[in-house]
Structure formats: C-alpha cells, structure tokens
Amino acid sequence: MEIKIKLNGKMVSDDIPADMLLIDFVRAHNCFSVKRGCETSSCGLCTVLLDDQPVLSCSTLAARANGHSVYTLEGLQEEASEFVGFIADQGAEQCGFCNPGFVMNTIALLRENPDPTDEEILAYLSGNLCRCSGYVGQQRGIRNFLNSRKAQEAERE
Image (cartoon, rainbow, N blue to C red; front, side, top):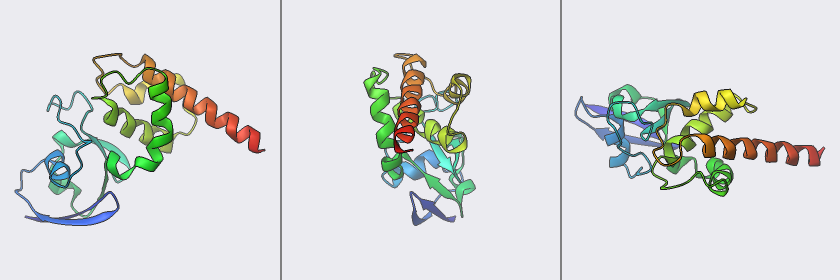
C-alpha cells in the first residue's frame, strides 16, 4: 500500500506492507533515535510525535500515519538541544538508551504545559522505562531547565 507521511517536516512516500509498524517505517527512513525496546508498548523507547502527540511507534501501524505528520528526535534537535544539556548535567543520562523517549515526551509535555508541576512531569515520564536511574534525575533536570528558563525571562523583563 502507498502511504505519504510528513516525516520530520519532509514529505515521504513509500510502498509498504499493510502490517508495517511505524517504528519500522521511521527507522527505514534513517530515524535511528527511535529504538526498539520491549515491543509491548511498555518502555517508551519508540516514542514519536504523531500530529504533535506522543505515540508508541512499536504499536502503531505506519498506515495510521498516512497523511499525517510524524516527528522523531532527528527532526527536533534544535528544540531538544538546550534542555538535553540540563538532563546530562543532572547525571540523569546514564547509558542514554532511554533518552530519546524521555526527550520526545518532555517536548510534548512542555508544548502542552510550559510550566508543569513535579507531579505533571512524573505523569508524562511514567511511560518511559529507565533501568539505570529511574525518574529522579530526569525530573530534576527538567525542573532545573524550567527554573533556568524562568530566570532568563525575568532578566529580560
């Protein structure tokens, strides 16, 4: 079946099998930040933004994205770069395997709610499995990023 997806801002057409998963589609188009982890929709490593909403690409058919916009971390480098440094500075980036999923969910969270509470941050991160450090470091990094952003805004005023 022929599908057309706006992948990271560029229209991509492909002839795919009807049962192809979105994770396989994006990886076939060089989006290797999307990782295969559990393949049971439990770990969050395969998170992408489908029409700006986080979805698990290991349980989403590529055909569902036909005519829609899909973003992976490759397409959001600029938006992610500043806050990723805060997470690394907090020591939350142990092996780094889970980071793309955390980053994708954090981008979605901050787009939806630019000033989340710690509870809201944890709720958004809860779908991501981190075997090295849990959520404490990531939450601390996001909180420090938000505090830094507020301080910069206050200086400009």
